[in-house]
Length: 363
Image (cartoon, rainbow, N blue to C red):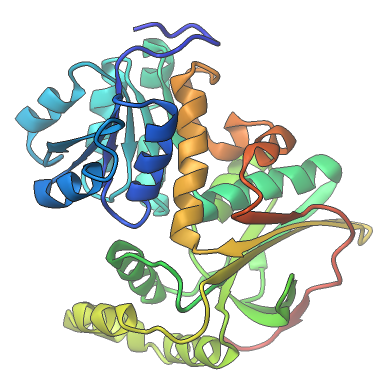
């Protein structure tokens, strides 16, 4: 396989979980750029074939269980890049890819998972492969916006990220399960950040946003060298207040201990109130109170995640990245990357200073 910078990577692109809410967007977008080189893979061959039937000259289907070593070895033959759109055996699969010099991209948002893959950096560097992490909306686009803010304010002492999610968005079952699992985790904002603030969100006004254990705040603190906190809210203020009141009361943690999360997941999956809009807002501030902010808005967060992942995958597949395990803010130039993204799905708000986010007490 050719690993030299600027040259096309040999082989095919395998999108594991390529028929899910994020994976299908990633696979279909890559199929437009690299027809007949993109494989939609997963345990459900029927779903993979249903997707590939819509673009038979661009996509192929393959049954793969990443928990079965023989199937993984077969999948990796002739493969130049694996895009992982599920959380199942990620670190093991990443190791197998990097050991063979195969590029790897992961859209996962779990801190422990990303830290495990991060420890494979020596293996990736030695084999000449790139492993791209924090690729999607959050983490992903939030990482790029945070780096852009810090680049514009080099003396920044803190970064705060706010994410608004549409309750009627295109959430897949994996996204719902992940969110519910995180709501049951201990509420421990890093670096002494407050749990709740009022944050200005483009198109939505000031909203109460609550700390949430997204991985971007931990990886960005390491890669940017600045304390970072990430908070979220929903497009419905009433739903936001209810969810985080229940979290504060310990309901989600209790449901997790009782094994009742599947019931809650099913209920939330059927929730269709609100809109499919999302918003991201990032602020960097220095010791003198100077602030720089960037924001992005759009519709359908899973679709946006898939589009971001596809653009990163294209860069990797064309040999435009350097070897090693890298988070998105380390992998791309922020301005150049943002300029590549389709404006019909994403509106960027990159200028101006942010009104002060006001800390609030309580959880």
